[in-house]
Length: 333
Image 1: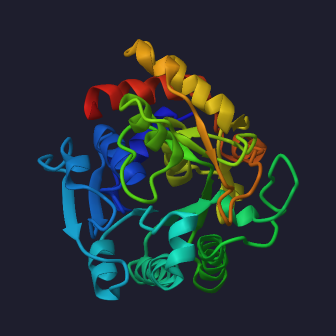
Image 2: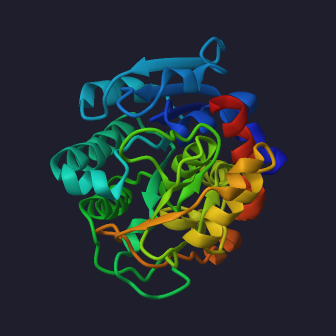
């Protein structure tokens, strides 16, 4: 958990959040502003939304730079006089990367390298970046532990693994301290339910609210370590502020350490949504083919994060779904 001393570090820092108008980035911006930080948001609004910044945009401690991480000059301007970087900017989605691997690589690899170079040149203290559980690829080991990975199953997974390799090199060659956070199926408030590559939870929520039948890919037994946004925020803040030197230049699973299959997930969603609309309890579930590039099961070990950074998840799947469903109902109905 975040200590008083760590909160003081945040309050006295200038922090750049790339992809700050996105789902995770905007939640991080809000929390950092609440803690008293001077926050810069860099976003090109390709997947993020200006409305996600409504709570911070008029705050004198918040600065918005509209630009693209594929432009090195933009990255260098954003990094000037910055203490820490939370690098969230990326093109997510396995299906998107299969459809358009070139753009995914340009953003997730070339853009990432631009940010590392800018962080190095501007002498940033620490570079914390969004890694991905997709890096585990075809490894069948459960739970997933950070030092055992398999063969990547998508262009997206390759890009996120390359990020980790580049981060290691920039520490070894240039002394830039980095921490990578392998996100496991993050969900929560402000996650976009629309578009071709919407994550499963907000997409299913919107379909249930419209009395439409969600389509589960496969028989519903595929399972994931669904991770609520507040747990992800905690991990980012811990990574920014830890004074444990052994915790630096590592990658960490950012998860809960529990798994839920898609059948269980849809039943929980129906349960919580039917508290607002009883007819949702009767909405049927449909099944389609498995998606290419999907792994059957994902479950994280969070022992490393607990040991080295003091991480303690505050939200299990049921707690997070209750909060997320309530937010969606009141904001998107």
